[in-house]
Length: 556
Ligand code: C2E
Ligand code: CA
Ligand code: CA
Image (cartoon, rainbow, N blue to C red; front, side, top):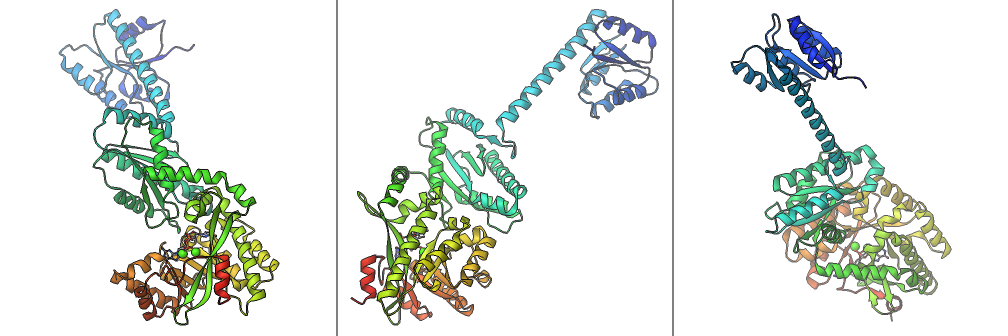
């Protein structure tokens, strides 16, 4: 094995020779009789330790030491040597970063011990550093540099045990449709988003005395003590942070919060609960976070039970369609209807979509279910065509997930053809937020639908972020204004003005409107006064089972 290399910088040759004698067996040597030469050697050759004389004619030892410490060789072990024993030069050299100090004349034992000690210490430090680096790699997420999940769980457990007092809060952050963002804008942008998000959470946890981690993919966890900023503020902060990244889509985080009631609960269970709460926000653009409660847990259990029964439900034809009529408020006639799915469960009775659609949106079953509903609606329209003097068109809901189905257009055209219908009889409702999720794709597909004669409704208008301004560029025939607006028009002047502007601007753009969720006479009167006509809501009718709707159309 090669010996370590000792560089001796001393202008007196005898001193150099003496030193070499002490280390003949253990070191190879390089020599310099001046500071400049010594520095040049350090620059060009491998050196393990420097023995540096302080007093030299041209460049003295202090200067050499300073230069070494300011260079990339700052870590090179350096022992200084001098004849002075005033204590001051020793102190000065040590302060300047020397590892040890030897006085002349040399005492061989002392010199050997000091060199050995310095080298041993260096080796220990290097090992420590290696261990620290390895631990860092193991504990941190490679992309974002914040803790990974395992580390977070371990450290959070410890932190919570040490500081049991006060209410801690664990939140679970998830980027909405991150996969789509990655697909649309590329992995580099996706990574930039993740890094920015991690940086923000890290900043928040550092300033509040908490901690955070990347759970994997686009999911993060944040543990904060009592007194940290509230969720609204945190989400707002995150939005601000992400605005700096140049993408045309909205990057939206949904957050689930678990307020830690029992600090002894394992942290991974707490994370489960925060995640449950997060999932409950999906599809809800008004409230971006939810707090875990027991009702949520029970509902999730219920949902999971339902999912197990999906296949049987399809086989036994338990999914059925309710029709909610849309009325013309002047003529009080039914002008169209919306098809709404129901699950006719053998034990639970009629289950509303809120109970199962969120799960189906997560597991993808929604695409199959939508097709089942569309087919039932086509059968219904075929019946209308056959037995009624005129066909009242029906709109169906198209889930955002359906747009991932490459055969979507073929599927719907195929159905319409199979039942001998014209496309305009089957209207398509696409939720506003879907337009925001992947604008180019949706626009392209909806345009193709329109070209084939389908009528496109933008559902839940006003809950997402699209401005009225954007409407002129979108292939949309009708706006369905979200219920939240109607609910507010009785109390809130701003909501009334907003509603009026929406209706007016839509009209200017040649887009018709349907107002959803109209329940009272007052609402109806206001809507009439601003020129609305098409109304869907409990005021006129709740969603009706197929037979009841048939009767309504037959005028019975
Ligand atoms: P949506 O498309 O906005 O449908 C309107 C919802 O508002 C329906 O709830 C309807 O029953 C309810 N509603 C109508 N008028 C009133 C009113 O005056 N007051 C109140 N409080 N509510 C009213 P529903 O049937 O529970 O459907 C909920 C959501 O589930 C729908 O919201 C839609 O997004 C989704 N959905 C329903 N059926 C389907 C389907 O076949 N496929 C897909 N993909 N989604 C569906
Ligand atoms: Ca709808
Ligand atoms: Ca709607």
